[in-house]
Amino acid sequence: MILSTIALGIVLGALKWLGMPPHYGLVTMPYTTFGIIVYSSYEACRQLLGVYDIRLHGGHAGEQDHRHRR
Image: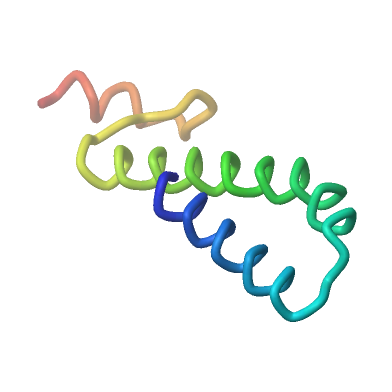
């Protein structure tokens, strides 16, 4: 998340240097920040699902038996 925030700052700085009015950067900041948070949350969950054998609710009927057999 820190790296993506730094990258966003660099992109906005470059756009400002190229002549984009600062108002446009401030208007889009909440949306881009929300996108960074959603993507970071998705990546964290994806990595946890890859490392741990996490079973989510709503699985098929034999999933509970599979879990108890281990």
